[in-house]
Length: 253
Image 1 (tube, rainbow, N blue to C red):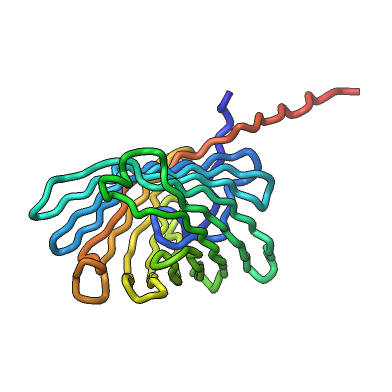
Image 2: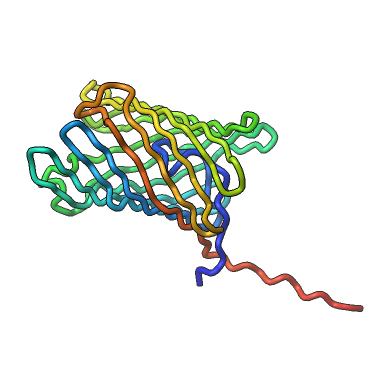
């Protein structure tokens, strides 16, 4: 029975943002995100409809993750194509956590690979497997939470890339959190790069459901590699597989 639900941990990185943070759902807790993603270029439109992001807490410092999108691509002079995107499972380990210093650090290795579908043959996804190895940091500075992330995509050929970004946010109240993000990623051979900014927030509808929203664009002029718009809209579902223990009955002498 999935009856006991867990409240969301305070965090700025992670969905709906590009970068992540050291936050962990907690032992036996699920943090599942179902979102739609839109990315627009001058002559191309890309959608994840939906993007499924499943996260499970294993102990107090480890998170198991699986992410996969359903891709929809359209161009001004061609037909619309759709199909399953690449899978991205991973394991996050928060190896440092200090309440005194208000600092947490994690690593989050993730493996991206093709699914056995026709998406590759139809040109929706690129061939190959990549390993992403990022380091995430969360630091509380006054009323702000600062979450930088730096990572590298290990791959053969043009798939290898560096990435770096930072999310800065503030919880306005118990329900609403607002954040801003800068993010950059670039292939090592110079074939593609992103240089973007975005903003968004999380709104706690109930203890179990959190609304996720984000929108951004490129600093550079829109092109095939620089988006003129991208954004997320989705819902976060929080619940636990752990049963709450009943308090022992009081006894009278």
